[in-house]
Length: 186
Image 1 (tube, rainbow, N blue to C red):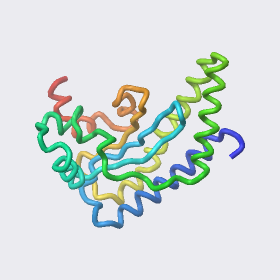
Image 2: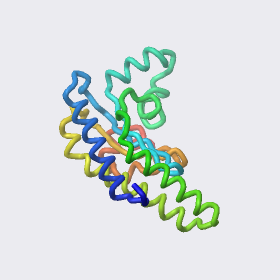
Image 3: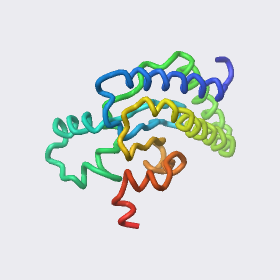
Image 4: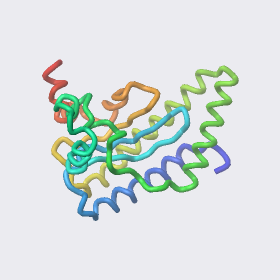
C-alpha cells in the first residue's frame, strides 16, 4: 500500500474479522457470545476485534476478580464490558493492515506538525466511520455466533470516553437490554 487507502484497509479488515469469527463459530467455545468490540486507537490507526462469552467471563472473574461485588462486575461500568478483560481476539493481522497503520500515523503526524486540526479530525472521523461500517457489514457473520439475547457490538476508541460510539452501532432497545440499569437510572 503506497497511499493511504481507507477502502482497501476497510475491506482487508472486514475479511480478516469475518475469517476470525467464522473460525470461532466452529469451536465449542461458541456459546453465549454477549459482546463484540472493535478496540481501536484512532491516533495510531490500529484496531483489533475482541469478543467475549459468558463462560469465559465467569472463568476470568473467578481467576482475577473473585472479591468483586456484582456492581463492579456487571453492566455499564463493570468488568463484563471492559474490553481489556475479554478472552477472544483476532489473530495476527495481514501485513497490509500494518502498512496502513504506519501510513495513517505518518499522515496524522504531518497534520499535527502543520497544525492542520481540521484535516486531522477529518481523517480520524473517516477511520471511525469505516469501523462503524465494518460492524454493520459483519452482522451477517454474527448470525453464525451463538449469541445471547442481549448481544451488542460497538467501537471503543482509547482517546475517547469508553461508550462514546456505542449508539452508532447499537439500537436503543439493544442498549437497554445490555444495560437495564441505565434504563432504570434514566
